[in-house]
Image 1: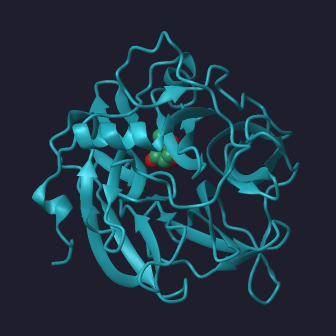
Image 2: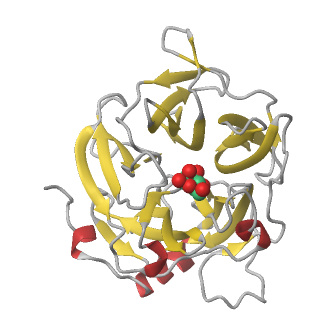
Image 3: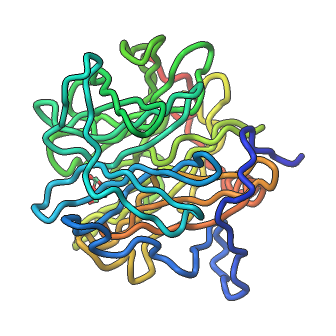
Amino acid sequence: MSVKIIGANVPNMPWQDRPASDESGLPLWRYSENPIIGRSPAKGVARIFNSAVIPYKDAFIGVFRGEQTDGVPYIYLGESKDAIHWSFRPDKIRFVKEDGEAFMPNYAYDPRLVKIEDVYYIIWCQDFYGASIGMAKTADFRTFTRLENPLIPFNRNAVLFPRKINGKFMMLSRPSDSGHTPFGDIFLSESPDMEYWGHHRHVMSNASGNWWENVKIGGGAAPIETSEGWLLFYHGVTNTCNGYVYSIGAAILDRDHPSRVKYRCRTFLLTPQEWYEERGFVPNVTFPCATIHDAQSGRIAVYYGCADTYVGTAFTTVEELVDYIRANNQISEMDAEEGVR
Ligand code: BMA
């Protein structure tokens, strides 16, 4: 049975076939021109990484983690005709509250972006007396209206689903501590209105037994709806004598009950191995935050931060990826269950 992406056609998405030289046996392959965003990409911004992009008006738009030259991260707006070459607005995104008053978090990083019923939602990590999740909405990428913080600290890693499920907005997040958290599972929360979040469920554990993700896991790109379930790219972290290593993994969540994991891939799909993934501000980090995908062809482009310094792109097709995940499926009882105690 062939698996299909359920969603829009994006025939102008970036694409490159798998190079003949790729004998990795893994279902993701890197764009040959990576990194697509290099150092000092805008005035006052030293590095852009961990960023999210989306099709917009026959082109592409995105929210980018820009590490300013004073070291503080904020979110910058970027535009592109081909989703490969990006230009950035010179100033960071300035949010307003519902009443129009200005709102700027003390810092903002790792933004994700989804469109739900003609509204674009941005979700990121910001200070709320400790690292927590910030949210805003926009209809036109001109006015960005800040929404109430969905969660209390500490949490640095939230991802929204691109549609309501059973009438509710859905969010994945990873509760953490105030430091470089040495633990972490993915949880699901739901909301009737994007303000009040509850009915929390456990989704996936870092205690899967897989060495590459044995410290913590966290949601990556907004889940892609497929005929098999929600395809989730996430990051998995292991520890070494030289620090953490961040790889990209994937799982498929039940379409109607996404706290239930249907398939979980026991191997990573991509791990730091190129110079731009191994060398940078934080070495050995590949951190997925977005995909662009085309329902008709089944093509998927994954956007991932590299070494907390660059943005890279990697490609796959939904068929190849889901086949691989199924063939390498290893799911624990805890991941398969509803996740309520
Ligand atoms: C995590 C987040 C990410 C970062 C990663 C590696 O805790 O802060 O933004 O890419 O660490 O430094």
